[in-house]
Length: 137
Image 1 (cartoon, rainbow, N blue to C red):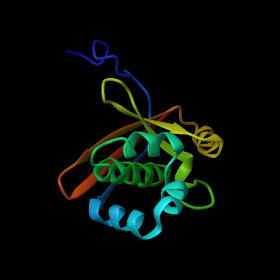
Image 2: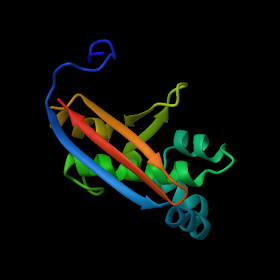
Image 3: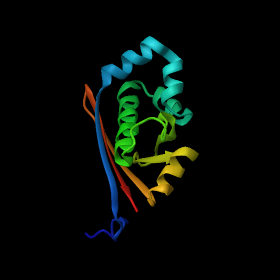
Image 4: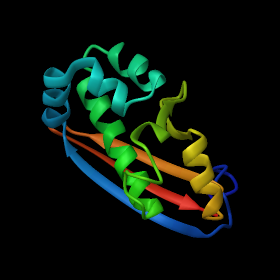
């Protein structure tokens, strides 16, 4: 198998790489302490709807937190003036594959970096969630 047969890009420049690892219990405690205010400050409406519809939302919420952090690290900005937590959202395809959606602020940052795409990979165990992000041009 080659990249073309997998529908992967055959060229492009890697402009940034980021990774984040978070304890699932940390996200659960934040939600239990701060409730909807935390959820609304951190997660997009689509992320909240997807995760809260699951029997156990905590691993998926934690993986999305890690994705936001990984993407911000790939940009080299962190979360702050150039990128909000809700600037980065994770959507899940029917196949289960995650992908990144950006709000206007995130899209402007992507464009300013000469980038065209963000790849994301999510995983979790019973206690940890991790995300790995790659920004390409």
